Length: 121
Image 1 (cartoon, rainbow, N blue to C red):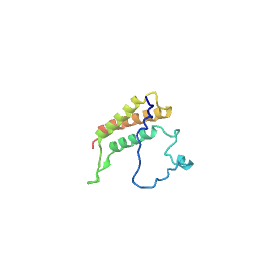
Image 2: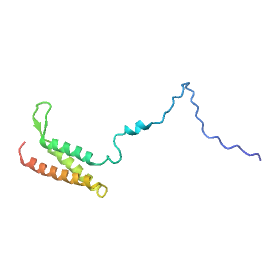
Image 3: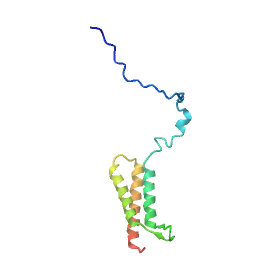
Image 4: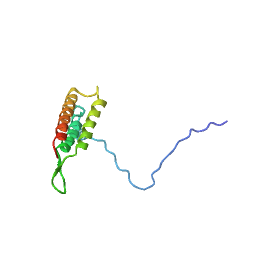
C-alpha cells in the first residue's frame, strides 16, 4: 500500500490584484500615546463621573425650552443606587483611596438627596 501524502489543509489565495500593504510594528512612540498607564487606572474617575451626574440631577439642570432648572430626583436616586451597587460588587478589590472616595461620595449624595426631597421644587 503506497504512503499517502499528508493533507495540505486549506489555502487562501488573494486574486484581487492589489499590492500587499506593508504592516509596520508600533514603535516606542505608540506606547507613550496610550490613554493611561496601569498605575493611573482606577475607579475614582468612574465614581466621580456618576457622582457629578447625580449632583446635577439633584441641583437641577436648566430646561432647554424654558431655561428653568428642573430637578430629577428619580435619576439622582438611580445613580446613587449604581454607586452603592459598585461598592458591593467591588468589595475587596478596591484600593484604599478608591474605597475612601466611594464611601464619601455615596454619603454626601445621600445627604443631598434627603435635603432635596425636603425642599420644594
